[in-house]
Image (tube, rainbow, N blue to C red; front, side, top):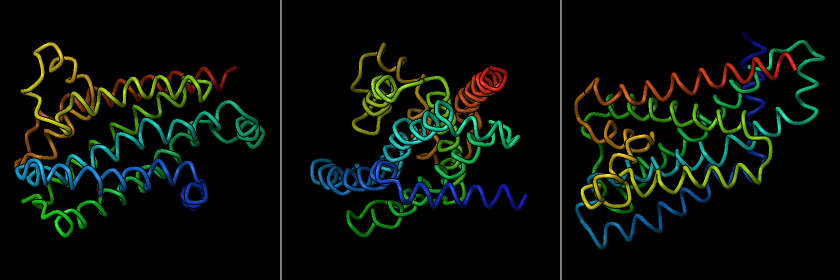
Length: 238
């Protein structure tokens, strides 16, 4: 257990020294929050009610789709993988450690947004913080599980950039964090329901615990875990 905790903290510290990770997890999301948050509030004062949730979803989605996959590509397609095998370390441990490290980073960013948004923009703080944090952790877990799938299956950063953008941009445009989904055609509303961000916004803006809103997130999570486990098994026996 001590070795596991040490490895997790080591990965977290290594991430802090990685400029790409810092930019993806912290710099870009917080700049986006400061810039777009001011635009949202000035053009639509009602956006204050969901500003914290929307900006947190942006930060998490970006980190999950454009951050954690890069670390996993470096792990499973280079000599690091050989070192794991030589040391008789299970390959799944690398994915788990990167997952936990990314979770901590993005949770910190979400906390920064939670405290800064009311001060900077007069944003409304969620009335039920217990449900909010449960929803935040659930969405964060599902998003990172999707990012883990990308990092394990995609072998090059060039392909990752293309595929991640194909998921990242629709997640923003169709989830309701940029503008209300009722402005979209019905077909795009249905397409948006396949993205975790859509359900993340619904659970994070709900003041009551609604199990039915968590079911789609659970389904996505189970699928991602299954895909990741299968691929890691294939990598291990190669």
